[in-house]
Image (cartoon, rainbow, N blue to C red; front, side, top):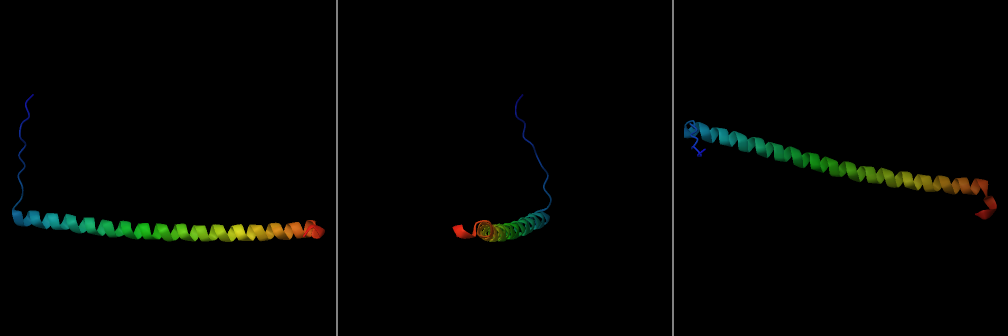
Length: 75
């Protein structure tokens, strides 16, 4: 089967420009939203790391207290 050309009727150039501008604005808005989401995700990751480090520190202190209470002469 031979390839047949496809013709699409486009609206008037003025309305086409309007549609293109709306799409560009939507893309810009979406890009801004994605940047915001990325920033929030990075902040969340940093906060989780901070919490993890804090819990690790508390755990180490609790282990030290446990060791001191169970074997005071070994300290």
